[in-house]
Amino acid sequence: MKHLDETPSTPGKFKMDKSPYFLHRTRWQSSVAKLAFWSLVFVGFIFIFFYRSPSSLPDPSRRSLRTYSWGGPAWEKRVRSSAHVRTRRGVSVLVTGAAGFVGTHVSAALKRRGDGVLGLDNFNDYYDPSLKRARQALLERSGVFVVEGDINDAALLKKLFEVVPFTHVMHLAAQAGVRYAMENPSSYVHSNIAGFVNLLEVCKSANPQPAIVWASSSSVYGLNTKVPFSEKDRTDQPASLYAATKKAGEEIAHTYNHIYGLSLTGLRFFTVYGPWGRPDMAYFFFTRDILKGKAISVFQGANHGSVARDFTYIDDIVKGCLGALDTADKSTGSGGKKRGAAQLRVFNLGNTSPVPVTDLVSILERLLKVKAKRNIVKMPRNGDVPFTHANISSAQRELGYKPTTDLQTGLKKFARWYLGYYNGGKKAAS
Image 1 (cartoon, rainbow, N blue to C red):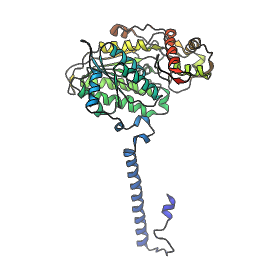
Image 2: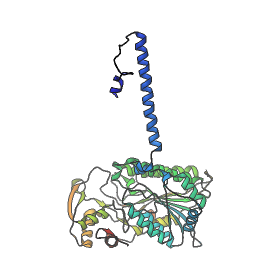
Image 3: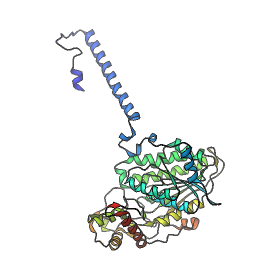
Image 4: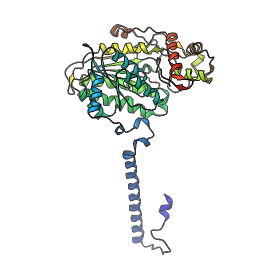
């Protein structure tokens, strides 16, 4: 802005008055002008920040909650119909992240057994939204209505609880992915921390308070070297921001349980895979690139060690989620006030059989009948960990959890779905 300071207040030639009074007045006028100018700039920024259109915001985590359309008699009728319990012992469940991978499978399973199910999803574009829309269509055909909205929208959540007295919440909405946190860290804070707190705030004030089951992650074990990972192990060494937000969620859950009597069960998922999965997962994009003849990067650990994952098939994860819902005690609060001690639990949901990623690639090669072009590369410092391995004894004992699908069988089911859904690069009905 230097040129503005050098511009005379009036055009043309003039003679400079160098008297002390004139110099003092000139400096004062210049200061006032600068103050007025930067005040206008500041006000402009404030206006832009708060009132610019949601579609112009670059961060998908900051989409305006006003862009979603909800409410009205017809909308409420759909909400009630979807959440209607059809069996004597059924429960009414709000599933957040219902158009996500795990959310779709859990919602469908609950509906099949006669529970009332209402979905909620914001359909963000972290990965291809058309896949989420296809999952939504799948749920719609089974009678599950997925409300389009954000878990940070307190007004929407309060309205849903006014329309339906949910007995349970299955909270699966989150910003997923370890590596993306290096590109867009605010989206993780927005969804995994602020969104979770907003949901808990609404749940604590609901009457009756619902029991809540929510998705934590095996990533909370971070840089632990003791295996298998047990719920009693330390979780204070996160290797990624994603892991840190999930760990923060566990601490937040403890707080709301302690203060408000909310019944909370956290589930630490271990590398979930299967049909309708997430395109950002290795097994998914390995399949895509192998079929396209593109080279894939296979990570190698320190000292040429193998990178291994406790791959867990989606059907096994669903059984664990339903087991957690079925064994969840009622919350003990009312109107935001705690009436007694409430249940607080956390469980590992894994397969207990870590498999090297190189073996995963070999299985895909056999199933796809295509030889992979492998590039063995050193694992980058992006938040990934060299191995995961779940101790599931607590889930077995308290939830009746028992995984039954090995990687070979699970990948065969995934490959069959993938080839059906992506028909020569074009999406086809599954």
